[in-house]
Length: 395
Ligand code: PLP
Image 1 (spheres, protein in one colour):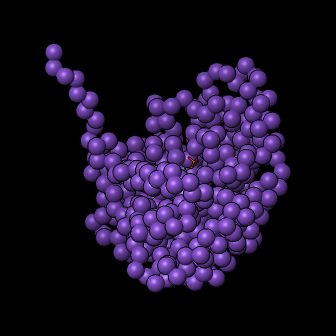
Image 2: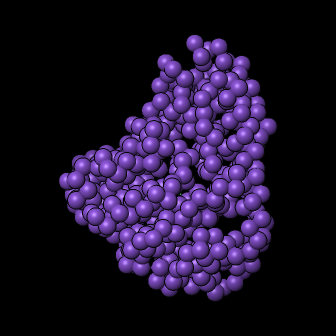
Image 3: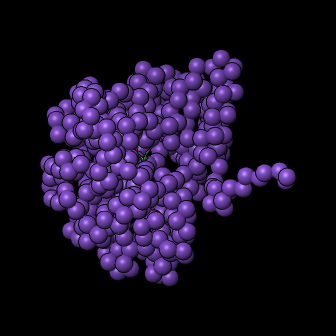
């Protein structure tokens, strides 16, 4: 008998290396030296899910009615809670029966979306630097990726005028994401209008990833894509409870917008997953429908952290913008460094873990990302450690 060979698919073999693998390796080495690590690498909230949401889950978990397979598209009461949230927060009216479906986190929706619209050789327009799933999911579905660079000189918005006509004609989907990971940028109404115009001209479906709309500061609430005239004709918005309510582990989100687009995604999902645990949907209803004080408290905490970090970095000599949304700070590395060099320097000399910007795409080269996922005292400590090696940084 011949030796059995496990032969992975081309789609697995051509996956880019896992962004955090090299960093994890370096982190372990530094840890072995006994260094106290401050981890600003991964975008996972450090704060717990609010109590009232947990209590609702506990109760809902006891109910045998919730132990069965859930509805594929989500409980109507969950979709109604999402519709009410959109009405209250964005003054957008949505039909919960046809224009909203539940997702097992927005990542799940992003990953399945191209299967609904991309055929072999079709293009998706993908922002870079950006959340890696847009490009990977497109390729998994057999599509091609055209990257739209997000540059500081354009306020980290893609310049749609530079997309070649032949690519635009072959494009089926445009992914956009504001407030943006990793740059922290927010979109203007004008940009969304331009995107809708582009979508109509070339018949391109827009997926707006809105995971961070509730993580905002200085009272500057970001827009929903669905608020813009014409958005409902051309696109959907994906959202999630992960960041708004510190529920990354719960895996619950939604897609909302154009009924045909939502329906097509639903068709894919029906054949792959069996919906979200109903008790979690009930907890999500609790989160969306009860007092939003917990969200305000969270915004206050992140705003304080942001100010500690930004003011500290400015004092050290960094030229850094203060994000008005997301819990990410996108920092230009000092002269003479690459993203990888500077990430390595901070880790080995200060024990601070950051993410190299080029890991999010080539236009992220020359930047690093810090996540505001430790308390303000630790951030202050991080700033002090950076101050201590100031001479080394600015050679
Ligand atoms: N979209 C963006 C831009 C993200 O940064 C993340 C997570 O970090 C997600 C989507 C996925 O979030 P979830 O699947 O938890 O809803």
